[in-house]
Amino acid sequence: EDQVTQSPEALRLQEGESSSLNCSYTVSGLRGLFWYRQDPGKGPEFLFTLYSAGEEKEKERLKATLTKKESFLHITAPKPEDSATYLCAVQYYTGNQFYFGTGTSLTVIP
Amino acid sequence: DTGVSQNPRHKITKRGQNVTFRCDPISEHNRLYWYRQTLGQGPEFLTYFQNEAQLEKSRLLSDRFSAERPKGSFSTLEIQRTEQGDSAMYLCASSLETGMREKLFFGSGTQLSVL
Picture 1: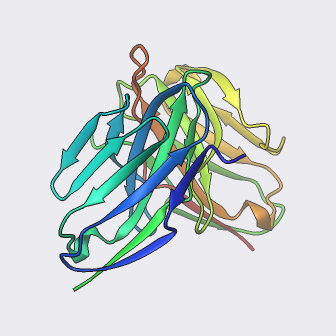
Picture 2: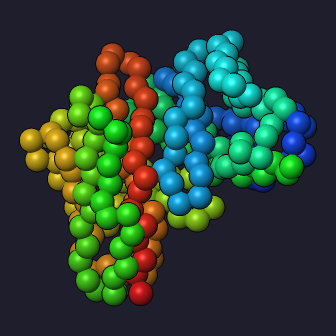
């Protein structure tokens, strides 16, 4: 069973068109949920950590939120430089592994 | 400190050869992780170290894979008798584990191509 599911797999937006990416997790006992940005041929770049339901974090045009079963990454008025793959990862109290989703590939068209 | 460093960035090898990758973590970080990523997939856990101790290995990890972290500093990942299925991006990440809160910081990865 997949620990983390991300949707959609791919998203194309016009510049300025706001949207949200989803990350859902299936196991209880969440220790932390993490969002990363990954550019082609590079390692993931840390964006946010969320630890408890109701928590929100913001950075420039990105805002991450967390509920008991899922997290959203909201992108407000995106620019072409926001084009990347956005990865979600979770860590549970039962271990130290970080489980990653398959990511959402975002393309922002000028 | 410029972050997690991985070498080489790219490696092309022939099937059956051995390869070794190096990771230099952020200096004060006590944990070091190795992940593997193939195109269109998220990173897949391989193993991790706390200081010099290897605490966990993926059940999917073949016996051909071995990792070390002598003295709790840099780490090496060796793949023996490479196979075409080993072609992937190998990512190293480090973290400072303090209590229950931990964040992974990744290097740029080593792209392995097995011909």
